[in-house]
Length: 115
Image 1 (cartoon, rainbow, N blue to C red):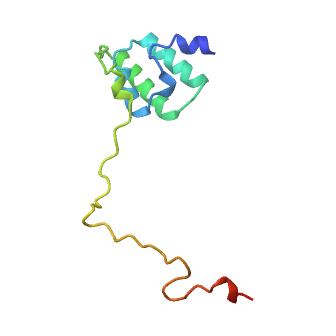
Image 2 (cartoon, helix red, strand yellow; image 1 turned 90 degrees about the vertical axis):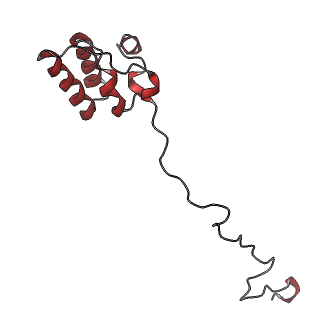
Image 3 (spheres, rainbow, N blue to C red; image 1 turned 180 degrees about the horizontal axis):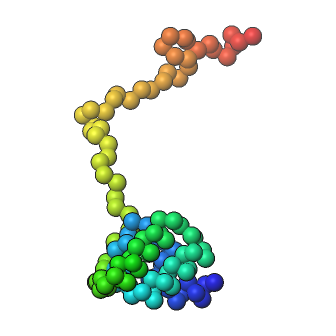
């Protein structure tokens, strides 16, 4: 099983996000795509991945040439999240420090008065 994984045309294929796969397979030929499809069918069998591989195979069979693709591994990394907190020190709430015993509405009782 590991030996077959080491012979795949794309390094770390198992760990690639589906979103980057479409760009990474553009440079592969029909034989390499068939190898990936067989591996995917036997291991992950992810429908989205199989559809991407089959669509690219169909493109190649209809005359599209392999292209440079995105073999850069940076393309496989997820993008950083957009946005973030809009809270600034000026807009942050004042910190609330609870009293050492009880709350402002209910005073704590000293230990000696407990029954």
